[in-house]
Image (cartoon, rainbow over all chains, first blue to last red; front, top):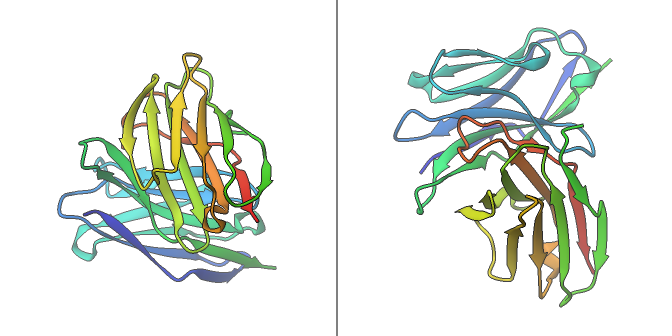
Length: 116
Length: 115
C-alpha cells in the first residue's frame, strides 16, 4: 500500500539558507505525490504536486520538489529560506481505497524553524 | 483564506457527549473531505462526500458519521466521545471527486477538546 515517510520531525535553518525537507514513498506503482504546508493556526495549503508529467515540480513561494524513482524520494527544497517559511510541511501520496476511490495519505509532518 | 469555512472554531465537551461540526465548501466545489489531526495519529483522512453521496471512507470510527446536504455543506457528527477524540478536525473541498487531479482547499479547522 502506498505510504510516505518524512525524515526529521524538526528542521532548523538560518534565514537565506537552503531548505531541504525529505520525503520517501513506498508504492508499487508510480504514485501521485503532494507537499502541503500548514502555517500556525491555519489549515493546509497545497505547495505542489507530482502527477508524472515532469520529475521536477515547481510550486508556490519558490519551493520545488524532484521525483526520483530510483531513490523513491520526493524531497522538497527552497534555495533561500525566509522567516515566513516557518511552518509544518506534510508530504502526501494518493492511495486507492478498498472501495476503489482515492484518498490522501499524509506523512507525520516536518516542522521547519527559520532562525534570523 | 481558502474559502472553506468551519464552525465552531473551538469546542469543549465531556466524555460521552455528542457534537456536530459544520463545514461550508468553496463556492462551486462539489466534494467535501473530513480529516482528523492529532499528535499521536497525525493527519488522517476520515471520509469524503461528492455531491451528496459518500465517495470514499478512511479511518472513520463507527461512532462518527457525516453527511452532505443539498446545498453542499457538510456535517461531521461525533458521538459517545472519548478523551482520545480530542483533535483538530479539518474539512477540505475540491471541484470534483478525484484526489489526484483536484486540489483540496482546507478550512481552518475545529479544535475539539474532550474532558
